[in-house]
Length: 451
Image (cartoon, rainbow, N blue to C red; front, side, top):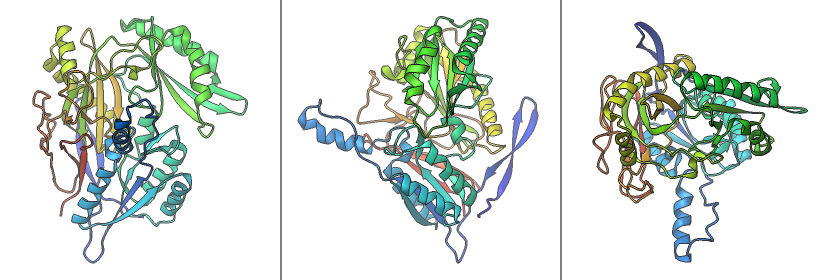
C-alpha cells in the first residue's frame, strides 16, 4: 500500500484556526517508474431513439451522442487520453483498466484488493442508480471499487471521502433552504423512512418543513423533492405538500433498483429563484464564478423540463429584479468559503481537490445553497447563445488563469477559445481546463506535482 505524504494547511474560520491536510501525489522515483492507473468506461455508444430525426441527421447525431457523457465532461475519452499523455510526460507508467459491465468491475475490485493497483489512480466513472451506460456505473458496484482503490493507491479523482456523500445528497449545510431528509431503507416487509413507516415519516417531515419555511418567509404552497444519485434537475420535482406521499409511493419507490438498499430523499422549501451562482474551487481556493440556472418548473414537473438560463439570461433576470450582481457575488463569497470548510470537515479534515458550490438567489436577494458537488459536472456551457441552447462553441465561465490566495476572477470577462489555466506550485495537484472550437472540446489536464 502506497502511503501518501501529507502537509498541513492553515485555514481561518470565524477567528480561529483549524488544521487540515492535503494529499501529496507520489512522484516518480529514480530507477522505478510510478504507475498511473486509469479506470475508465468502454460503454460509449448511443442508446437514444433517433427515429424521429430526419435521416440525414441521424448518423451525425448518433456519433455526437455516443461521445457525450451523461453527467461529467471529465469522464470522456478525450480527457482520459490527455491524462495519459501528461502522466507519461511526467515520468509515470500509465496502466489502463477498462470497465464494461459488472464482471469487469468486480474483477477490477478484486485486483485492487489484491494489490495489483498502486501509486496513483484516476477513476473516470460516475455512480448512479442505473445500468452500465457511458461513464455511469451502478452505485452498488462503484463504491466497493472506489473503496478498494483508496486502500491501495492515492485516488486523484473523484474524492473518495466525499463522492458518495455528494452523489447520494447526504450532506448538510447551514446555508441550505429549510430541508428535511428522508432515508428510504429496504426492509424484508417493504420500505421504511428514517426508521419509521413511510407514511408517518413523510407526514412528520412535511409538517416540520412547512413550519421552517414559514419562519424563513418562504412559500408553504409548494416544495421541492430531490432524489439522491441524480443530477441536472432530472429527479427534482415541484410538488404540493399533500402530494409528496403519493409521489413517493407511485413514482419513486417502485423505480428503485432491487440492488439498491437505500435512497436519500430531500424535501426542501421552494425558493423564488431568480438566478444561480456557481463557484469553482480548487484545493480550497475560490478560482472563478459564473451564473447559470434551470427555470422554476411548474407544479408536478421536473426541474429539467425547461432549458438552462445562461449567463446572459441570468444577468438580465437579476437586472429585472433590481439586484446588484457584483454585490451579490461578493456577499456570497464568504458563504462559499464556509461551505468549503464544511466539506473539509466532512472529508475528515482533507481539503477537497475540486469543489463546485452553487448558490440560489431569490427575489429578495437572499442566497441559499443549492448544491455542493465534488465532480466537474457542468463546467462547460454555452455563454453566447441567448436561447441557452447548445452550439458549436462553448465557454468556461470562470476566466482561467493563475490566482493567488482566495482572490477569484469576476465573470465579466469570458475567455476566448483555447485560453488555458495552468498552475504548478510545490507538489500540489491542479486540474487544468482548456477550450477549443468543437462541441466536444472540453479538455482537462492534471499536473501531478512538481519535480
